Image (cartoon, rainbow, N blue to C red):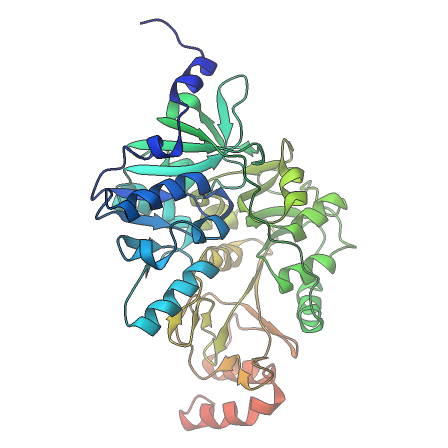
Length: 440
């Protein structure tokens, strides 16, 4: 058998989405890359097969669906015919949950798991037959890049039966452990659709107040983990005068990009991967995607590495900043559950809360507004609906009314501290409850 070049291998494997998904068998397990990495063309081809009735009893695993999944697979007429499981809910998934509740049926099930453990779960506990993912165009050496999405993709594609890639010239080429050789894939399709856009938003006034409390405690040379949204954006803005910050973050966002572009984050003082900005997935807009493209300072690795508690803890002065739905008087944090139903997921929040707590000089922050619904509902509550972060691990809790550190505090001290940063309109009610159960 003669040697086949990478370009010849590519040409031999290039096909249409419909033909690429023909190999997905009835009753098999299909896994999709998450968020920006979810391949729209392949997802539509799978949905077409399901709706045509020639793909049955499919087990579907995915995380954080967005535009292209909402237009294809994450629809009631499709989900009613598959067994769908999600590791973290995006807006389309929440819509399906709400629809299911209104109809008295279940369209998808949430899998409780920390982000650090998803690659292992998908390879050791869940046998993935087919994996679908968007990649960057192949280079001269025969390598694609996973671009925005390393997460579980880099692990699953090397431990499943069949890999189908959707080549998109808009997908950035990223360094680190992000390469996929053409020999590792069984089929290739091309679909140069625009990547999903999540534009940057300026933080509101309350987020700036919360962010100020957090930013004041982040020193020069610290390594950051920031999520996405108002609070992380506020914290990043307020770190503009810092020096030599580093990035080791589950998510690389627009806020972190701004810190790198301004020179505030250069990674020179990082304990691991100095001068490199390490992440496991990225969501943003074209400015962000273009920034990480062919940028040698950017490196992505699997979530089993980036979110590994021991790896996080090895970074001196690790600063973890996350948000929450509610915090109770014991210090338990709910970051995923609203009105009795799954709203998002645990993601990597606990990984970084725990990891930062073991870091030399490290700190973890949970920031949230004291109330929601125009001040009618307190986010400091007697008991959380679901505990994402345990009371043994939570450190700094921050609202627009202040910041408290729960580390080493008794249950009585915790309750009093948390009441002190609740909205003043709810403090008497919370105090009365705490006294009624002999907490204070």
